[in-house]
Length: 131
Length: 158
Image (cartoon, rainbow over all chains, first blue to last red; front, side, top):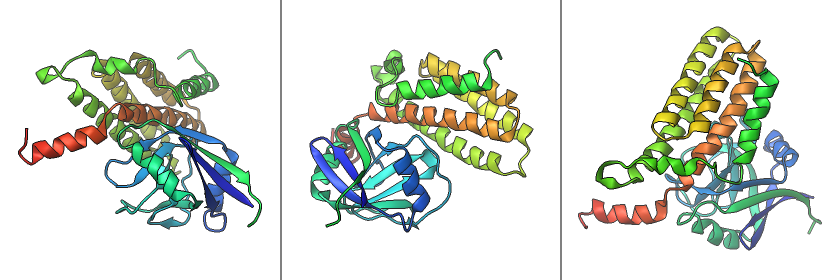
């Protein structure tokens, strides 16, 4: 089964890719994998980090408001957003993945970026044995 | 314009790839001038907000340009003028000379685009580059510490 392996600092987390709900967005993430970017922290929302993707995706897929562990693509800025805790979101994005393993560890690393942005986050689509 | 469309695309992509994980070499030049009070924070904040605003305006204009009903020549003029303006701001306000030059080259390239598809391809390549520039500027601002300090000031503290 394909999953998203997320690396930040010394933390590794895994996310389920929502191929059934956001197929084109997931396929783009897979096509451009591994995606690497310097992390920025959101300024208007709590508990959100993001990095730019090297592609456009204009079609709306699974446009829902995010919650903790959700990962979405924001078309306006060609940006991948990850919500690592409770938040009051600004609006829907293409929600294409959900963190299923080690959100706590990932959240601790993400929170650091409010004080110091710029750490590299990596998204890799990997094959993981079904549990 | 001496560069072909494909050459310009390659140049913009190259510029974007160089700054994908490493900051633009000229980025520190934003702090060349001092603003009132001999500080530079206000310049960095304006650089971030200006470049962010430009990315969002470009997104909206791109959406218009994607519609077949929009007149391509009008979109060329409109977006070309925007990129000239951006280039001027990058140069005169924030001393980002290379970014400014690339913006002007892109404006010329957009004007010369043979059709809507090539126009959009060039615009998108530039937007990816410019968006990355804005994120780099944003990363120079110590939001965490500034936020805590500002809250004290707003509440009447020193």
